[in-house]
Image (tube, rainbow, N blue to C red; front, side):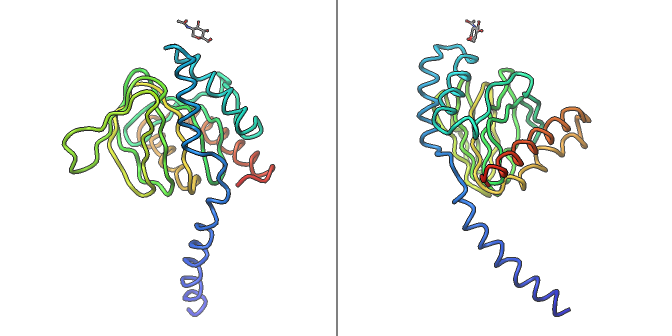
Length: 212
Ligand SMILES: *[C@@H]1O[C@H](CO)[C@@H](O)[C@H](O)[C@H]1NC(C)=O
């Protein structure tokens, strides 16, 4: 009993300590990401494939190709979460950050999820609309705009296009949101395997070069 009390007392302290330490692991800067996105949109000239490949090249230049994957077409997979569906490519995944290309030109709608991470969603093409409870009119984000969702908050959103998404916080805690629709809805286990495998490979790869 005494041991249990001690554990219950110590655990939150450890969490607060690690939580305060986590931002030291961050390498990506949301302001820089928005700036590079705007350049890529400009030079991509309305061709979204070109916008993405320009952006990935700029990201690799800025952050190093040891931290940013290339545009490998066979590494894309579906993501079903919160009622929304899109496809995504992991550019970076570690314990404290992920950077992905995410979206669909077909349009999708859903719940953002409630996460232990800040989220910066920079539109590359198309449009995103966001609604928080109590708001009557949606907030609209267009190419070059950045939608910031603070840790712990949630919104409804509609996305019809593509975005560069940065999450900073406890990335492993976000994964169940990305996985669970496989069991309750899609039963797409190949896609789940691809998601888990690629996330794992990236996280372990980053840990091995000292990036948390
Ligand atoms: C868009 O860019 C890609 C990559 O450079 C190219 O393969 C494709 O043909 C372009 N599409 C159009 C419609 O120009």
